[in-house]
Length: 408
Ligand SMILES: [Fe+2]
Image: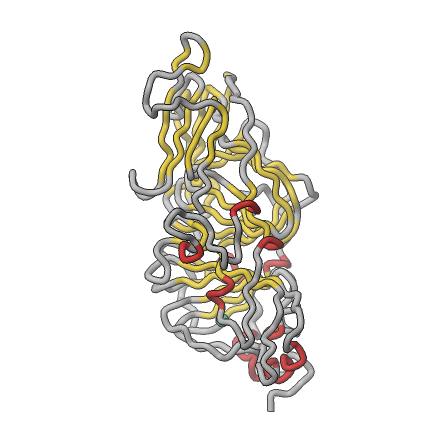
């Protein structure tokens, strides 16, 4: 959505003489996507450019690249139990890659540490979208501060310099990264960028960064920068990276809570696109769509089948993250934090007698919460790092009674 913000002080005329304080020229930076054609923000640094490094950059041993399985596994559906991850590290080192493709990486993270005070993270590879499964905290960035808690999406544009301060003992995330910008679904927006009056999202419920005064400080500030698909280089600045006396634009981190997704109900079963919240790239031609499966009034047609149909979306690889376990089609099988991956080369369907059982849900308010990501023309692979969490019995689970009710 086109919520163009101004925070702090900025000049009326771009790229014109402007001072942080008498005799100190503010230094302008454009932070933008899609070359000079996409969303951007204009930043005014207090007195130094962000390029001013004071020591040689250092490659860290940390390697966040997804590992390819060799030999390749057979074509199969996957169930990966991310809720069983043990908390370790911070929001960077605690990431475990789950699935990946040429432009997309999905990881789970369960971490217990805030970023050290003088250390920052910048993802130079991908735009990040988090779903917060458990925990709460604060994201501090050059744009300001953003609180987050369970149930939030956190959207962090590529190149944002930020730190995470945990408020809870640990924190569990689903982390989606895309080489392309991740935005609210454009078909919910009018030509001016406002959400349509029929959209499930509204501008006033987006969590926006609260500005903090520029940190005009000298010292040693380390910026861990992710690049090259998962390598991490430590950059050393002699000045605090949160040194903006002001900024304005449409590119900045924000939050959106799943409580504020307003589902669109239909008299008969609704297909996932009505539940879409975000997308990357120019879906459905590339990139992916992200749908929020949030409880809603189920179809009230007297003969409606609320459970989904089997579906074979041949151009989409589908992943689904189950925040709770009440989603009827996978009942008896998923646990909080379950992550399923259904490759587009295979059809998939509800388990067991979910269709028949779902008759009881007609016209009632459901209470499931799950996040779905469907790629378009981008096949995904399971990362080797996810194997210890995999449910080996999943491929044959449609052939057994997972719900106490035989499918016969
Ligand atoms: Fe599906």
